[in-house]
Length: 106
Image (cartoon, rainbow, N blue to C red; front, side, top):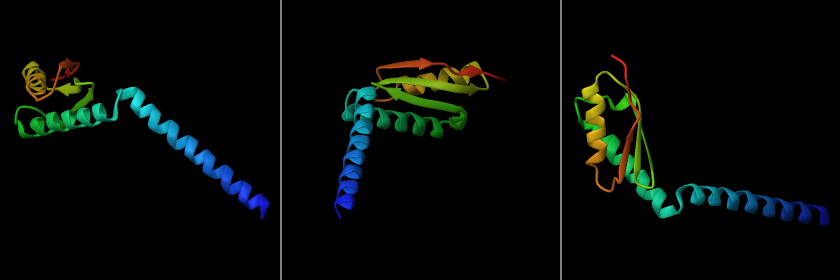
């Protein structure tokens, strides 16, 4: 019985430590949980605008946001498509900066 109690206690401590460490790593990367949620909202808004735009292939362009800075990557069929994707990101609410790393591949 003592061994079972000890094993359960050890498992509980180990699980708590792992979960606590995981939560800290998210908070450290994004600075705050609120910032993480804001960034996710920005990413979603940019992707939604791209999906609505007939001149941009939303499936070929990746959008990531960190502290309000949007990173665009992937492939565009023309310079105009690359520029339009950057414009969409820049005009999205709460975006502080845009880094457009899209590669043009006709």
